[in-house]
View (spheres, protein in one colour):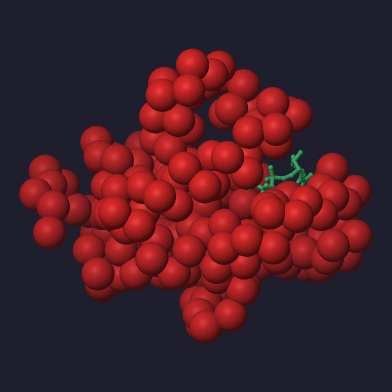
Length: 195
Ligand SMILES: Nc1ncnc2c1ncn2[C@@H]1O[C@H](COP(=O)(O)OP(=O)(O)O)[C@@H](O)[C@H]1O
Ligand SMILES: C[C@@](O)(CCOP(=O)(O)OP(=O)(O)O)CC(=O)O
């Protein structure tokens, strides 16, 4: 168990396939709640930082959305998996270090071990949220199937076996995101008010 200066009141752990819109949805929540109430934490942040350092790569480009990240993705996944095998909470601990807001939004859980870490550290506060959309929509957003990535644990680790607290459908013909996010935003505001 970590020693922390402040405990979060609510931890929303998001997962979803590439281009399902995890960043888009979590950015929207951040805007709705504001930076004093909510922070967005990315498990891939410390992973990319350390990977870039060890391999002499450009961190800004790894953090971006372009081809550079995709060219390095399969090797980063492999490298990250080796680290996680040694210590499943390694990136979760680094990503949450220093978070002070009452509501934490984790944008990119990929494996059961990621979720299990939050459930075990914050059993009362953790809620899981899945962002989903059709393959057609993902393709329109630039996705194409890549062997070694889209069939690996990084993308499929949470496809089954988890009952998510909320499912968000991020499609043009689904109810608006604001409507779907209403119960989550309500819970977050209540959590922040009791802070
Ligand atoms: N509801 C939406 N409306 C408009 N653009 C969207 C929506 N959801 C996602 N996008 C766009 O699709 C792309 C992929 O979304 P992103 O949030 O980066 O996906 P992920 O983080 O799951 O890989 C981004 O360019 C993003 O701006
Ligand atoms: C090596 C990764 O951490 C790369 C993740 O990068 P992003 O979180 O930027 O990915 P998407 O939003 O899905 O495009 C994946 C992993 O298995 O840890």
